[in-house]
Length: 342
Image (cartoon, rainbow, N blue to C red; front, side, top):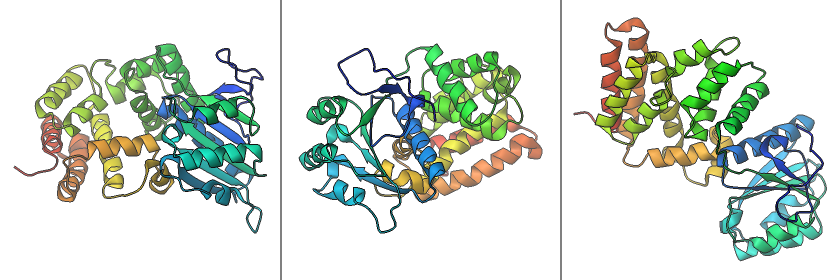
């Protein structure tokens, strides 16, 4: 857990510490503000994991501020029979119901012991009275500011933190190449970091990044996957050929498809908010939201057909077939058709 810098942010007149996502630390009330969901998810996960390492009996609960009913927060925060510490995540505070705002303001007056309440507010004027009360020092709070990362330097810092947290080393040139390949989408950059951490042995150098992502900024494995999943068959095939011509390895391209399709398969048919499902599915809330958007137009038969085709294509690009490029094009066409056999 990174230590606080002991200073408030320059902007505004907040009387509480305003920290970056990777400086998150325990406090009775933690306001996670700003539009960047990837950073917010990371901060909340880091905080939960730290508290759980301190006490494995940590009780984790989720609330949706926009569908909130009076009394729910106080019920979850009330002392339990065995005195376990509590971690309460509240999503959609920017769309909070009047009942939640009333209860949250009351809660700031008398926070519960051994309880951490995390309030996620993406922006806007809704809940301003609550935000002002928190920033004025109500509830002994801190604020984690998750602003959009607009330059490559900030994105490199983010990626470096991902590898450092996993106990892995990445060379500066490899870090620049990785960020260059995913500069337009922080979520995809985070996914790429996780794939390298999970699949690439040893220290990460530039040839490793080139092996997995083709060393090409304009066309990456995830661009091919996004085009195909969106049903843009022609664009996906063009992007695939560009990636291969630039030196991309077919194996990581299949890996990019597999990462997205696995998320879609996990989310298919589920109900409930992304915040509620995150722990159950082993996905971040933004991944669940993305998978739900990707699933528009899909049915269970098509998804099952693509899952089977992924396994066959993975074997094909690893030597089971003579023409791995044809196998990839066949997979792209099937995914672009949402798994429907022609």
